[in-house]
Image 1 (cartoon, one colour):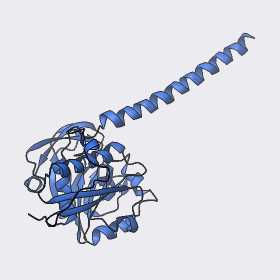
Image 2 (cartoon, helix red, strand yellow; image 1 turned 45 degrees about the vertical axis):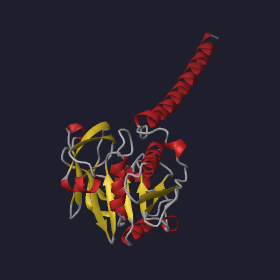
Image 3 (cartoon, one colour; image 1 turned 90 degrees about the vertical axis):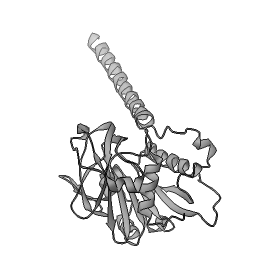
Image 4 (cartoon, one colour; image 1 turned 180 degrees about the vertical axis):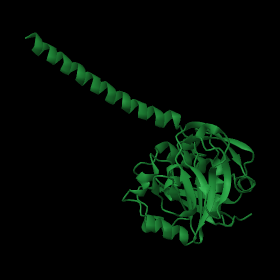
Length: 284
């Protein structure tokens, strides 16, 4: 009898432990996504003041860059929301004269969804390989899109998936054919050093602090352009490329290991990366 009671008690305790671990895991993931990767803190009132559609009144002297942001399986909500907030900030503050950013999101990336856009942004995600294996993301259509003169901006997972090769692991899409990646295991703030090309393109110079969540350390195997390098030993890849630009056909690709869209957010840096990828001539 005591043995039966003991087994019942053990079963109840085991169930309680399993429930506790499940709840703890869920709350931990929620906390990480809403705190460690909290999106841009520079102006929390932007969501209320700017419509989600990013609507605005254009005039004849304005240049518009039309952006599609991937927001499907394995894309981090914090990264997607951070990109939106940065674009809203740039629009509301007229950070680039006579330029507006128009955006939408999609969980499907193919020739149909890309047809009316200038730039595709693949945000931070759980892993680059999840983008590569996602049946809703058509890599051949992305290649054609960029090759025909459009732009691609990859952040973290979006950089892993776009590069030529992730050393020791797998091949990417190759829309940055002159860039390889090394896997980095580091989460937190880190410093990057802007190159002269990076300063000219982004408007940021010297050492900058950017949030990082296991984004790649990149290195060139051909004529790509380094915009920033890792400036400390936290990634174990000091002086490797943190932000790099490459060409694919007639299009441009900008890849970033760290997250300029997350706190401490750098909306102007992200905006000018998008402008560079877009191949647009900005009306002065």
